[in-house]
Amino acid sequence: MSSVSIADAKLIAILRKELTLAQAILNDIARVLKTIEDDTQREEQKKLLENAQRMKNETKDLQTEYLSYLSKISRMLEHKEEWVRIGSRIMAIIDRLSGITNRLSFLIQRNWVVPANIKDGLINMSEELGRMLQTMDELLNKLQSNPAQALDSIKQISELENKIDSIYRSTIFSILDSNVSSSTSLLLLSVAEMLEDISDTVYDLTTNVYILLFYLL
Image 1: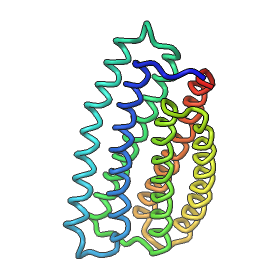
Image 2 (image 1 turned 90 degrees about the horizontal axis):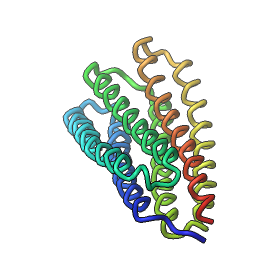
Image 3 (image 1 turned 30 degrees about the vertical axis):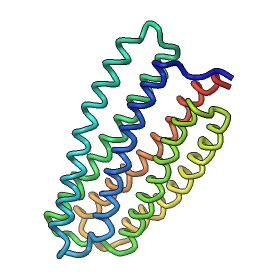
Image 4 (image 1 turned 180 degrees about the horizontal axis):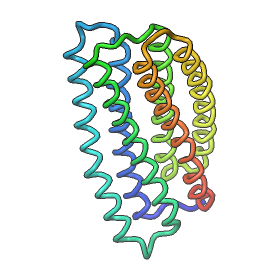
C-alpha cells in the first residue's frame, strides 16, 4: 500500500478546509429553512445568510491558495488532472450554496409563504447533504490516513445521494402541487434543484477520489 505525497497531503488539507466552510454554510441554510415561516425571526435569518456569504468569501482565498500551489507543483504531481477536477467541483459546490443563500435572502425580503411540507423536504435534503459533505471530508482524510477504509465512505456517499434524489423528487412534486404563486414556486424549485445538483457533484467527486485511491491500494 502506498501513501500520499507531501504535495498531495497539502492539497487535501486545503480541500478539507473548503469542505468545512461548505458544511458551515449549509448548516446556516438549514437553520434559516427551519424558521422560514416565522417572520419574527427575519433579522436572525438575515444574519445567518450574511454569515454564510462571509464564509463563502473566505473560500476564495482557499481556492486561490489551492490553484497557486497546484500550479507550483504541477510538474512533480501525479494525477494532476484529478486534483484539478476535485478542486473545481468543490468550488462548484460552494458557488451553488452561495446561490441558495441569495435565493433565500430574496424569499425572506418578499416575505413569501413556504408550505410546511415543502419546507420539510428542503430541510431533509439539507440535512442529508450535510451528512454527505461530512462523509466526503472523512473520505479525503482516509485517502491519506487509511486508504483501505476509504471505499466504505464512497459507498456511504452513494447511498446518501440516492436518498437525497428520492427526497428531491418528492419535494419537486410537492412544489408543483402547491397553490403558491408562480414566482414562489420557481424560487423553491431552484433551491431544491441546487441542493440536488450539489449532491450530484459530491457523488461525482467520488469518481475522482477513487482514481487516486486506485494507486494507493
